[in-house]
Every structure is written in structure tokens, then in C-alpha cells.
Length: 187
View 1 (tube, rainbow, N blue to C red):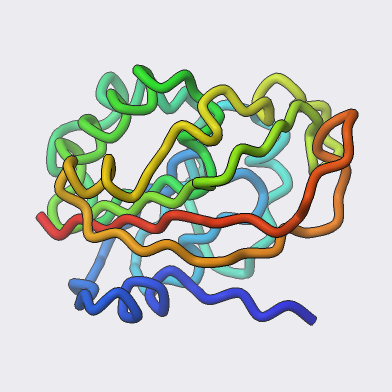
View 2: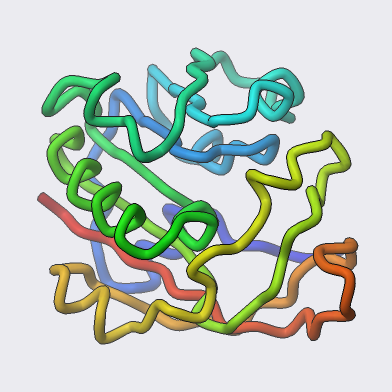
């Protein structure tokens, strides 16, 4: 059994104190909905692909909202959520769109934003959950992110080794051992 740290454990391990959160927006949550491991009264699961929202694996209450990450500033008002997270989603966007999403996250969040992405180049164009979302699973800026770049954007950043699950991601075989970047910005 793989032991995967939760977002609060990652943030604490980076030397940051996670502010108390009443509301969380989880952008590009997929079916794994990682914000479920963060204590909050309100969890909003946001994803562009409806079948992911319909198949979220969780026991907590949440509000599903369908939309593209690039449109969050059109959907949510400034200071709408205590915490806004984007885990393993920004690499699915072209870089300029992903950078805009980060700016929009800062506007929508009241207290903290958290991003997570692979630093390692990973080709991916197959829906790892088998729900037909190949377009949404395609990586468009993987391998284009660095610790220094996120730090220039004001994040506290850590690099960590990570072993991806053994699922088909691309026509070619892929080394499952990668480096992930975790970035937190306390506002």
C-alpha cells in the first residue's frame, strides 16, 4: 500500500502553517478530490469534465461545479474561498493559461493557495480513470515548471520524489518515478 501525504501534511512539512479554512475550491479535482483531506465546512469540487464530478470518491459533502479552470474568474467572485487548490491540473493547460489560472486563484482565495504539478516531463494523453476524458487528461505544459519559477511567483516550494500509480497514461511506457513540485502561498 502506498502512503501518500495529504495536502496539510505537505504544507506543514514545508514549514508553513495552514490557516483555518471554512471553504475550499478544488480546481480540476477529477475523481480523487484531494481537498477532502483538508478540514473545512464547504468543499467545492470544480472540474471541466462532468463524468469526473459524477464519480468522485469521497464520504464528505461537497458541491460539484462544472467549468474550465481558465474560467474560474468568471464563475467565482474575489475572496470567495479561504483556500483554493489546483493539484495535478496546471500541467494539463498550456503554460500561459496555467499562469492566468494561478493569478485568478490569488484573487478568489482569501487565505491560501496551493498548487501541485510534476516537474518531470510526463507524456500523457489517456484518461487514467477510464471515463473517456482523454482530452482533459492530455498534458500540455508538463516538464515546463520549475521550483525557481514558482518561487518567483511568491510560493514557498518543495520538490519531492513521487511514484505514479501503475496505469496506462500514454501509448509509450513511462517511468513512474517523478519529481513533484508543491507550492503554497499564504495571502
